[in-house]
Length: 479
Image (cartoon, rainbow, N blue to C red; front, side, top):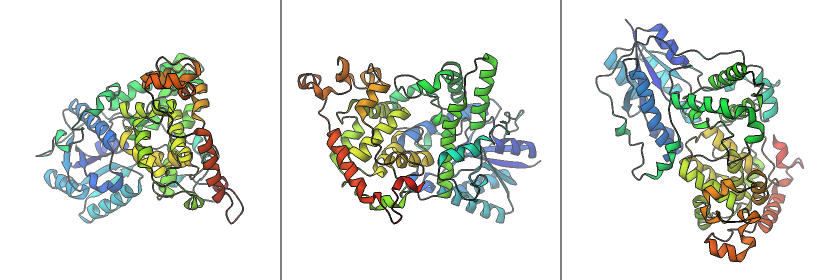
C-alpha cells in the first residue's frame, strides 16, 4: 500500500485540485502537507496582510480535511528538508504538487524535484492556478505576448475546453508523527490592526460564497458597476484566487452555470476578460522575471523620478494626502486589506505622476497591505499605471482624481465612508474641499499634498526627456 505526500502551497482547496486528485487515484494513503518556508521567497516573502489571510486559509483547509478524517500536516524549515522528513516518517514513494510561477518558486521547485528524484522519490506537478500554462501560449512568431488583446484572443479559445474536476471522494488521508501547530507559524499580527478584515472569509467555502454572491447580484451589472467604488460591483475574488481557494476554471464554470439556470442572459464575457488580465500578469512574470523590480520598458530607466520623499510617502500611505478619493482608497486598504480597482489606479497615478515617486515604492506598500498581494499582478498593475509596463497606459495619461471621483463616486458615498471628515461636505466640496477654505479648516481635513495642475505639468515635462528613443518612438510603442 503506497503513500504519497501532497505538498500544498497556494492551492488551498480540495475541489479542482489536480495534484490531490492524481495522488488519491494512484496511492492508498495521502499525507496533506504544508511547509512554512518564508525565507525561500526572499524579498517577496508574503506581507503582513497576506500572512493574516494565509493563517485563516490554512485553518479552513485543515477543517475541510478533518471532515475526511484527516488534517493538514505542517512542518517548518526548508522545503526539501521538510519533504524528506515527511517521506522518512511515512515511507512515501511520491510527492505531488501544483505549480507556482514566480521566479524563485520555479527555481526552488526545480531544485527540490531534482534532489527528490535522486533519492528515488517520484515527483509529479500540475497546473491548478491558470487557464493556460505560460509556456503553452505564444504569438505566431513563437514569442511571448507583450500586448493583452491578442493574448486574450488566443487564450479565450482555450478556456471552455477544460472543466474543473470534483473533489475526490472518499479520501484516504495519513498523518505525520509530529506536526507544527498553525499558531506556531506566527502569521497573525501581534497588534490587532486587522480587525477590519472581518468582512472576509478566507478558505474554499468563503471563495464559493463570494462567487455565488457575485453571480447572483452583480455579474449582470458588471460593466456599469465595476467602476463604482461605493458598490460591491466587482467579484472580490482576487485573494481567493491568489491563495488557490478557487480556480479560474471554477469561476468561469460557476458563472456560466448560474446564467443558464437563471436564464438571465447576463454577459459574463467582460468579467472573464478581467480574469484574462490576471493570466496575462503571470504570462509576463514567467517570460520577463525581472518585472517586479525593473522597468519592462527600458526607456524608463532614464526617467527622472523625484528623490524619495519620506513625508509625502507617509501621507500617501496614511490616506492624508488631502485628495479625497485617494485618501478614501488608502484608508480602505489599511482597514480591509483591499482596494477597489478603479481607486488603485488613482492612488498609483498620484504617487507615480503627481508626486513622481518611483513605482517600486507603491508596489512594496501594496505588497505588505493587500490581502490579494500577487507578485505577477502587483508588478503588472504598478508598471501599467506608471507607463513602464507591457501594454501600459502611456505616461502622459495622468488621472485627475477630482474628475474621476465626480464621475465614479458622484454623490461622494465612497469618500464619506472612508473620509468621515468630509461627511458633511456639500456638492463638489466632497471631491475638492480646498475650494472652500472655511469648510476645509472647520473639517480638520488636510490641505492637498500637491497641486494637481502644476504637478501634472511637471510630470509631462519629465516625460519628454525619454519620449524619443533611438527609434524616435515614444515609450508607449514598446508594447
